[in-house]
Amino acid sequence: MTTLIPVLGDQLSPTLSSLTGADQSDTVLLMMEVADETAYVRHHKTKLAYILSAMRHHAQALEQAGWRVDYVRLDDPDNQGSFTGEMARAIARHAPDRIVVTEAGEWRVVAMIDSWETLFGLPVEIRTDTRFIATHAEFETWASRRSELTMEYFYREMRAKTGLLMDGGKPTGARWNFDKENRKPAQRDLLMPRPLSFAPDAITQEVIALVQSRFGNNPGGLDGFDYAVTAADAERQAASFMANALPRFGDYEDAMLTGERFLWHSILSPYLNSGLLDPLDLCRRAEAEYRAGRAPLNSVEGYVRQILGWREYMRGIYWREGPDYVDRNYFGHTRALPGWYWTGDTDMHCMAQALGQTLATAHAHHIQRLMVTGNFALLIGADPKQVHLWYLECYLDAYEWVELPNTLGMSQFGDGGLLGSKPYVSSGAYINRMSDYCGHCRYDVTKRVGEEACPFNALYWDFLARHEEKLRPNRRLAMPYRTWDKQSAEARAATRGQAAVFLANLDASGADGY
Ligand code: FAD
Ligand code: DLZ
Ligand code: SF4
Image (cartoon, rainbow, N blue to C red; front, top):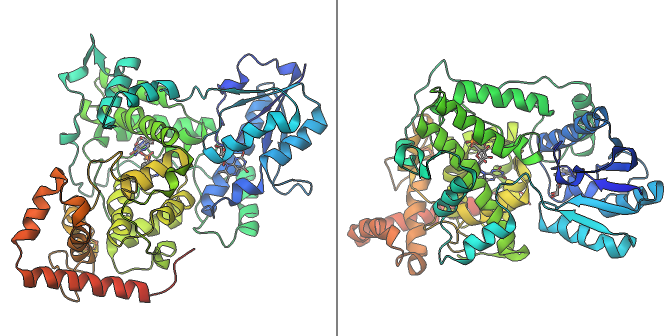
């Protein structure tokens, strides 16, 4: 009895549930490079090169482990361009009796897989993706008991479930959350850790050439591609992070510095999301660093919370809210993202830093995504679906299940506050507090009005004024509204006039990137 197991591009894990119990002598693993996946958004060139190279390396690793792998390349002249089309061809080649597949990571692909049983007249077994810590049922049970889906409480359940950072049923250190200690601005430090750099091997070079020739007009660059593309190299980066960066991860989690792309972040999300690393394993290893006295609790708890809490929670929201979550637009925002989101060509130094780094490397850290590019997009009233597409195309770690709730939900408040109690907006003051950007900027972060004024300032107050009806009742915004109310009518009008000028210039400055 031959079993056909499709292994999708974000399922590059040796422990994938679809492989469990399979008889290697009578199983064909099918890996498919297909146009549908490479083109459902205009993926950043580095993202395409990473995924295709990681897939090709994973196929080799599977073969070395004794599996029979049928690998379809993008440039195969008979390539049908879709998972379903390639499944049909593979069924003709191998005449399997059944299909086993680990559940897909997004609604679009779930719909494809759901059609296979009827289409191919074969039994299709869809298995749970056991790489996640919370099952769909667990998230559903948790969410259905609550009126507000606060991440913190979900995270506590996950701590209890896994026993991570728990001592005798209580949170280690007698607190669940050490976030208050984790908001320090960083100083430039020559001894700052750096992620490892992996020179492209022959497979990666071949993929880079393919991407250059077929996707030359996609956003982003490929120069200096140095990401890990194998589980072994991803593991090296994980070990390097645990030893060198984890101890200060917590302190500087929210910090930003000019020219510093990584700070004390792990740069492991691409590997986690495509399957080269295992989330629970990383959490346990971080805990072991704390238990061995090599990393402080604020850092380790902060790190574990990102994975065990935020990552799992985002996935839960994605599946719970359904395929039309992508269309939510609480504020009714319609502005196109400025074209310079695809070039980084702006005088705003914070934006130029976050965009420049994103376009060069397909990575930016959380606060750059949330409080710089995301903040700006929300303040100008950009269409949240467009913002979502920009993040989905630009980031190496972007798959819809994790990117969409982060962007449309957390960053753009498109769902009206399902996963954030207030919109993540700020004036320039926040960026100035958490970074050294403003010192390098042509704008003056202390000014709200005038040629030199930091655009974030007027835009922030204008945003609150524009959405007063929806936001004033929010108790977490009482303070900014009090500050706004204390301004004279003339000052308020000047601020709003400045925002109007800025938005008009933005609209006049050219086409959006879509
Ligand atoms: P670290 O700072 O080292 O954090 C450790 C790990 O925690 C990460 O590797 C990641 O797996 C996890 N994590 C941290 N925050 C989150 C979060 N909010 N949601 C899910 N996992 C989290 N993350 C993605 O993996 N894919 C995305 O497409 C994505 N899009 C985002 C879009 C926006 C608008 C925002 C604000 C955040 C987004 N994030 C996304 C979350 C976060 O920015 C990245 O996970 C993080 O920057 C990855 O870098 P790192 O591995 O160095 O993370
Ligand atoms: C993102 C991506 C890209 C760019 N290309 C492929 C591909 O050619 N073949 C493949 O199997 N997967 C690819 N992926 C990842 C898939 O889009 C991902 O596996 C789906 O989103 C499933 O959830
Ligand atoms: Fe950004 Fe304003 Fe600071 Fe310039 S002054 S870096 S635009 S926050």
